[in-house]
Amino acid sequence: MKKIITTTNAPAPIGPYSQAVQAGNFLFVSGQVAINPENGELNISNIEEETHQVMRNLKAVLLEAGLTFDNVVKSTIFLSDMGTFAQVNEIYGQYFTADFPARETVQVSVLPKNVNVEISVIAIVK
Image (cartoon, rainbow, N blue to C red):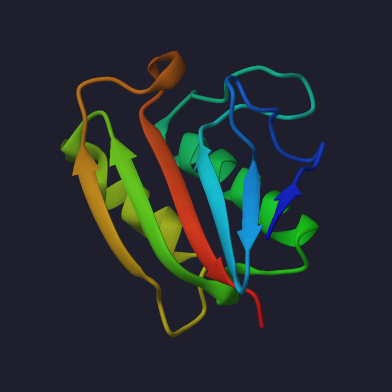
């Protein structure tokens, strides 16, 4: 059985997918990009602020499901330029306190809306 998680505090999907799906004890959060949910505009002034916006969007979806970043067990980071890895990694790390999730980071040729970073997570529902 699956439960769809939706919040207005994160950007609405830009395609035929859900913000998140809970299946059993797992929450699968779709990749988030730096769309500001308040105005629908991209927040890509610099890679640091873009990453913060992505993480705020992820946080909003997690909170809607009653979870936090402490529940995240796996994440995937997609970058348009691996040269931004250090900046993205630094910002990403600020949202976790300990027991970091498993993760991979990959460079891709292009991301939706030509953003520079997209992150998805899988969380455990305790």
